[in-house]
Length: 124
Image (cartoon, rainbow, N blue to C red; front, side, top):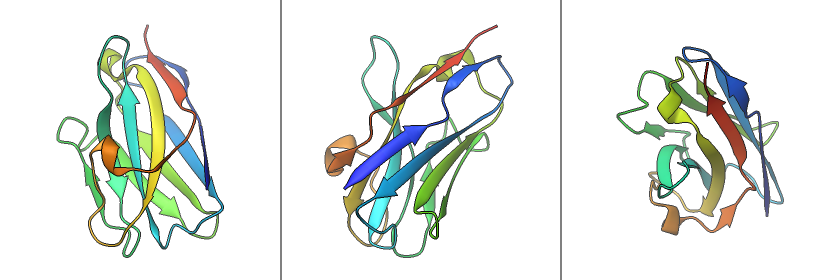
């Protein structure tokens, strides 16, 4: 099981980025994927997740309406589209996976596999 996160970079406030999480060694039909982030000096927090069985999603209230999680089963890749970015969105973003049906979890300890992280910096 491997996860490769990419797509981070430097963007101005109000800008957009799309993060990708390429999965290998397993199918998204059986694994939930979560996006988490960790800002300097802060604890890691959940951002959004997508379930394995039906692709239902959950996004934290603070990102609702700005961030959208989606997946491409054929490419075995999950995306996090981030719009209207704010300086407080600056963090290393990680994707993680866990084999489970039903609602995707939003707590990091519930995930078994992690990607290496991609840095998002929102600054003018």
